[in-house]
Length: 288
Image (cartoon, rainbow, N blue to C red; front, side, top):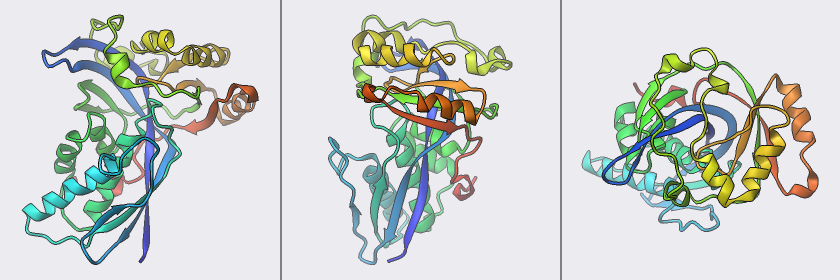
C-alpha cells in the first residue's frame, strides 16, 4: 500500500485574553493564533476493505477517542450520507508536538486528518464543510482548517485571517502536562479582560497583551513559572494556550539556536528553535 504523508503544524497563542463566560460555562476568548514549523506527521495508507485503523498508540489516549480517529469516523459518516463508499485507511502518527503543551497538537492532527482523508477519499467537502466537522471535534480545529494565521474570538470559532511578521521563536516544554479544565475552572482566572480590536495590535503584535491563563498555571505548576523566568532572560516570555509550553520571540534563527543550546541539561526541559508559518502546509488541498 502506498504511504501518503501529511504535516500537522503547531500553533502559538501570541496573546490570550478571557473576555467573558457564557451561561453554558464556555469561556469567551480573544487571541492571535500563529502557525509554526514544529509539526507532527500523519501517514495514511488506503485500504480496500473500508476499515479504519489507528496504528499509533498515544500514551493515555484510547484509540477510539483519539481526535484523528474521531475525525476519520466523522468523514466516514459524511461519505455514507452521500452514498459514497470509502476504501478505508490505516492511520499512523509521528508526534513531535508535546501533549498538554498548549500548542494545539491534537487539534492540528485532527484537522490534517480531515484535509487528507477528504482528499484521498475524494469526498469533495469544501473548506466550510470541513470546518463545521472540525468544530464538533474541538474549538481549535477550525483554525487549522482556515489555512493561515488568525485573530480568534468567541470560543475559538470566529476567525479573521491575519498576516503576521515572519519570526523565530524558542519554545520550552517544562516537562509537565497542564490539564486545560483545571486552568479554566480556577476561581482565580481573570474572566473580564477588556475586548480588543485587530487595529489595537497592528504595530507590535509580538509584545501585545498577555495570556490570562498564565498566572493560574504558574501558581499550580511551579515548573511553568521556572520556564517563564528562565526564558525571560532572553525576551518577552509567555505561555501558549493553557500551557505548559512557554515561548519567546528571537531576533533571528542564530539567536534562537543560541538560546536552545543554553537550556540547562539538568532541567529535563525540551526546547525547540521554530520559525513562523504564514500558511498551513496543506492549504493547497483545501477546496475554498
